Amino acid sequence: MILRLDGSSINLSSFFRCLLLQVVPRLTLFAVWKVPELGARVLAVGLCASAFRLWFALPLGLHWLVMLAMMLIVVPDLHECVGVLFGGILAAVETFSVNFSMTTTWTLGVNLVLTLAGNVAMATTWYVLGTQENGYELPCLVAVVTCSVVSAVLGGVYLKLFGEVKF
Image (cartoon, rainbow, N blue to C red):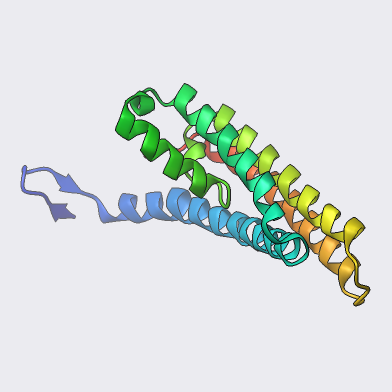
């Protein structure tokens, strides 16, 4: 037992049980979810940027606009000038990795779908319109699509198991 300043005590065994049963599984699934999500996003953006120069920003820009609109609708604190600017920064982060949109089921679902669709669209466009045959086109396309689908499924599992995240 540990005594707190207010005179109450904490039972260490219940603390470690809580840690092992709630925090460790959540962090483990979160880490396993983020590896394919970020890997697929980086590969898709890199492939698209290598072939189409600045056109790769089009799907990212559309993703950003939708996430900004979603955040301005869902989060009431963002309705002021500073909030809109902060929402723009949050939406920019959301185009690469699902983070702040995890606070509501609706924004998380939209972000998972947009990330999946954006990754698949960028990689498929690169594959179809690619001008050179180097032998790695199909494996790269399969890697992006597979990691994107796995990431979307893991995001859904995370939401189902742990619910919305409160910051």
